[in-house]
Length: 553
Image 1 (spheres, rainbow, N blue to C red):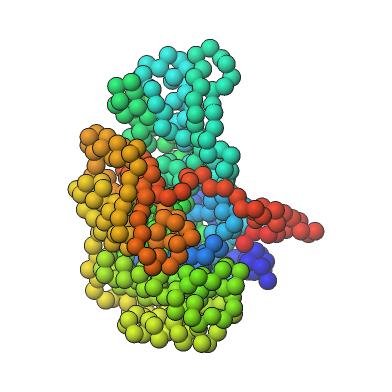
Image 2 (cartoon, one colour):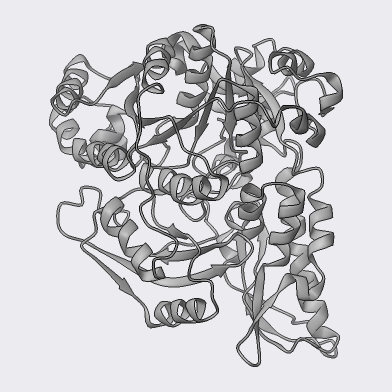
């Protein structure tokens, strides 16, 4: 049975009943139909002085192109904790339409570990990503309108891009201002996908509505004729942008198929953005639950590093435990097996892929000082010989392991993991960052590249070096760094899966994000606007004969 059919055949509880489990009342909600709602700002004020629950981060090894089921694992774990009579809450990201219609599909989990209503969450949801897109493009419109009407700020170079919540490679580089109207200025421009936009990053890192507007005002939109930065607040744009986000800033409440509360809010990608749900949602969840399960996108080299070095630093958070998700097919993929053969038994490939898993676990335990458990997302085609190979390798390294079957069995299939997490969060951790914000920008980049990725060297383009010097001269050198890198490898080459030979990270472009308050470094061939695959998921999505949506996974 497809994920969408499992979700559709599950009887959901009214969203007011889900809210009751968190101690929320009807007045704390703004309902969007029967099964989803916004949680009001006033509701947070009621619980802001409560003690925080335990924070559990779910991350993964470097994945296959279809991912390794981190969201499915997070949902299963939360359901498993509920089965252990623990007050568990999920804090997850919202899906982007790009992957939904592209190659990865939706972001609501799978099998019997899903959040629902599945179709709604994957398609538009409560409109948050549309609001973010509109705020972003309003700023673009104001910039060009200012230039058209005399350019009082003497803007010479515009660095701000428009965005759209779809994969569309044709929009990576575009020419704008071609109407030949008087005063119209032609220029080369481009689009980002909404999930990679700075407004999305600001939305997810803002502490409240006031901080949101402050950050929006600090967006660097370009440079004037004297080489000085120009900010959105000089165009008086921040107020109207914030107003467009007035409802979006409130977190969304939905449920798992087993009725576990799920707060789903914000959706930056982890390969080209910082990959975590909103600070507002996470902090809210920590006040409402005794155990909060959240996830960070792609492998631990991307989402987890950014969760820890950016989000935890900004929000004064630290995880009490980390789940590192792996699958035997991903181990075989990292061991050199083509993706079309990863379902076939291959113990030797499992052994060859183990260094990838061990590197991620080592990073989390030794570099960040966190309590870690490996969770295997078990599939029907996994063989006993492969599982024994994995168990032996982890036992030799004294790494805890849990075999999880939440896709097939829901929370029941994650009870072993839940039990081990309950014990693990009580152990002492020694959390530390990989770099200090006071470090020079290049030092920060090199600490991540060498300590986390395992790179031998970091090389910079001339343009990247000049931008770094400019950022430091402007006084923004103390921002954290957000490295855009392929998700398929610890290196910046998606085909270098094993990373056996010494490798170099190539930084081609550096971008100051004044509102998000971090510095983006783009490596390898990363693009901030993805493209569709040869056969996109969009071709299989539609309605069946009974009028039900089909094809979303």
